[in-house]
Length: 92
Image (cartoon, rainbow, N blue to C red; front, side, top):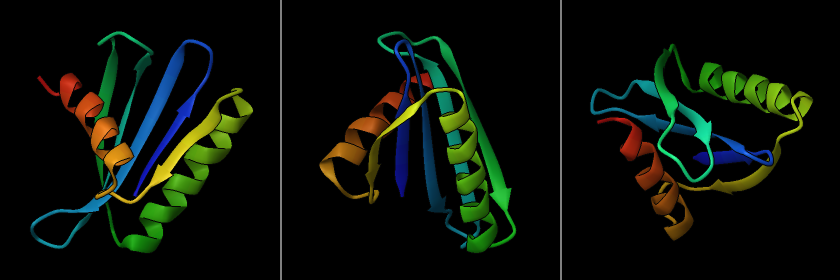
């Protein structure tokens, strides 16, 4: 699952996925739209339910900061591939 929120100048992108060991990872990137300025963080959840609780908490925080959800997609959709490309730019 990939979710993206945006404000006028900033974005937050969350990717919930399993690693090769079956662990649930919540990857979060943020930054200024149109630039490579931002950050990236990966958190290991105890299970899928905890990962989704974190996503729900992030959704609440982003809404309170004036961000709007602009994308919610499965990881294999074309929109998600574009979002993942942006996240990969922050990794190195």
